[in-house]
Image (cartoon, rainbow, N blue to C red; front, side, top):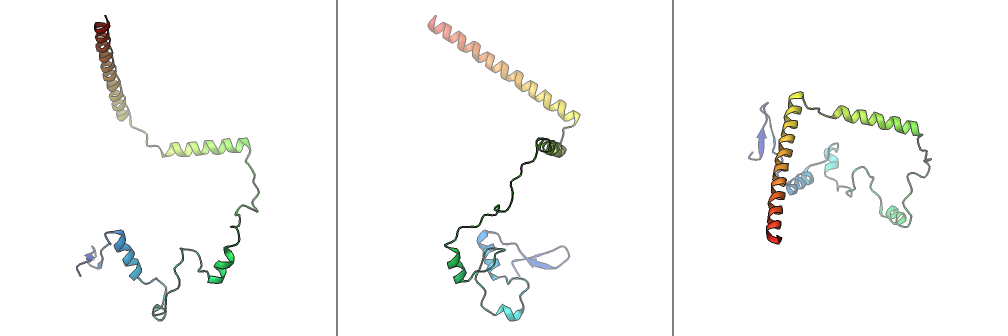
Length: 142
């Protein structure tokens, strides 16, 4: 088949769809896993967002008039003490510093030299412009 790709083990698999539209089309055509062949011929259930059960029309009519229940209604707000917050902060700082990729000594010397050369160059450029503009203003206004 033209739209199949051969794997290293010699088996063929379908090529990955190129665009979003072709991926949607492929998902529509694919049968969900776990359904038997007998169920495959039945009319599919109403599509719902992942993880949410399908609601009947009577359930949705009842739910429209009610406010959304609060998730934190039963949870009691307790704030941690000063020392526990400070300890947590320090643990998080140490954890983040462990993730840092520190430069080697050679890289550090190279980066420092590059910064010093760049700063010296910028000082020379700004000093030159200051001197030139100062002479120009003095010549113009006397």
